[in-house]
Amino acid sequence: MPDPASNELENALEQAASLLRGVRRVAVLTGAGISVESGLATFRGAGGLWEGHRVEDVATPRAFEADPNLVWRFYNLRRANLATVKPNPGHFALVQLEQRLRDGFTLVTQNVDGLHQLAGSKNVLEIHGAIRRVRCTGCGLTLDRGVDPLADLPKCAQCGALLRPDVVWFEEMLPDHVWPNAELAVKRCQCLLVIGTSALVYPAAGLIDKARSRDAKIVEVNLAPTPATAGVDIALQGPAGILLPDLIKRL
Ligand code: APR
Image (tube, rainbow, N blue to C red; front, side, top):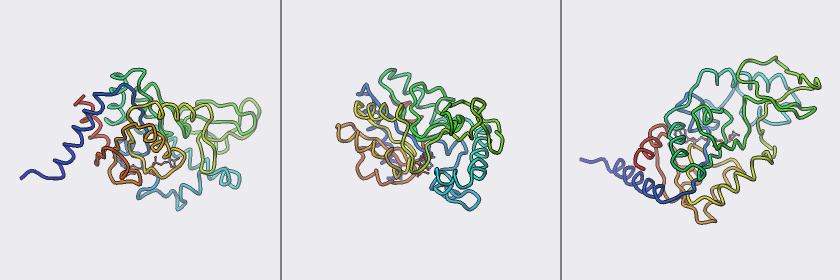
């Protein structure tokens, strides 16, 4: 007997493919879920704690002020972890979608892991920064330091002040050279693909409403329903590393 759940997914995949075949401008919003199949943990799933701290308690300006050693230890571990992971078929499927759409493709990511670029995606907007980069708390200089370990309390070679990870922490504004472009891409797109995000963290999650208010079609790919699911046009439930290659193959 055919499994009704797999029939439903098959129909949803076909619908999403037919939608994507008919549009020229696509924006994509990704979150931690797309990197799960590369071996990286999500923020809010099981294992979301680090040494007993909630991520929300380590990734804040206040935490850095109170205990920069603790915060750097956390980020140095995350950097070291990145050296061991590779992009997965979900990342590569988005590279193929960009090749198909060329200038009509914008990838907005909340991830700081750099895996989209490593896969080969070109037009990537990192709205929460990048874990490979450091930024000087004194002179503001930013530098790509790769994933090699840094000193416990790394200092700026230019001015000697303390460096921080160039990521957006809770309670901070999004980078003003990136965020307006993300908003613009979402306002202009005909279809927004929302992949592997819990859609809980704003303003990123607000991009979904922005796209909808401009009549873009919304396609969500997630292992589980999210607060956004009820309002999307097509919900594809399952692992991004399997569903995205399947979807792109159908185009
Ligand atoms: N395929 C698709 N979705 C998946 C997969 C998978 N293999 N595995 C997990 N997911 C989904 C989960 O169901 C969840 O909805 O990915 C989502 C991950 O959610 P979060 O951990 O909340 O990650 P994200 O939405 O990226 O968090 C947003 O919060 O912690 C801050 O700044 C950080 O950028 C991050 C932001």
